[in-house]
Length: 214
Image 1 (cartoon, rainbow, N blue to C red):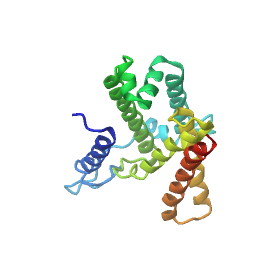
Image 2 (image 1 turned 45 degrees about the horizontal axis):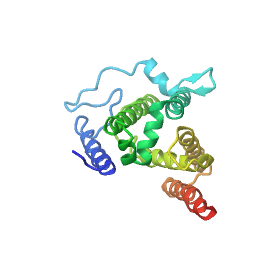
Image 3 (image 1 turned 135 degrees about the horizontal axis):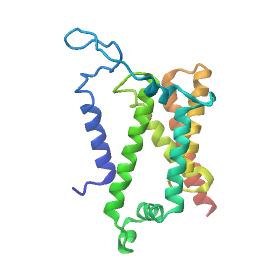
Image 4 (image 1 turned 90 degrees about the horizontal axis):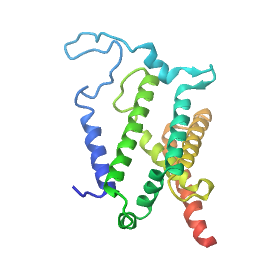
């Protein structure tokens, strides 16, 4: 319908956030939960499913970390070592120029959003496996984390563009930052402020100081 990307993304996000509450009536789906008729829900989470979020590779590295590293490597290879990746960058940099050069802009835009949705779904599966329940609100606080990781990636190695390696570094930085705040017993309500501050500083160093150097 030719809706601008950011508006379609935000509108769809609010739609899905509301839609996901309807089937479960806003409740978490867990083993032994009480159903609408007062009965206890049967069934259980298979151990193999829970292992996706809780097991450790060689008893050292958590499985979600391994999955994240593998996904980051695949995306890096796609963007940096293939023709399709160059087209993604070209369309993101200047859509009109890419269209005039013969790129299938519409097809690649749809593919980019499909890949984003698939990876978000994978993250949801890992999160549910780690928590051991289906919590419709457990991922809401991760929106800022994901956005921050991607934008901090702009600053890594002076790339000043979205990139897989930079996003991975951004995610690690935010994870270490949040763990550090937790270990320091910082109030939970300060975490969003600190994440926002780090994000703004990273963008200032990336774009503000780079412009002054030029």
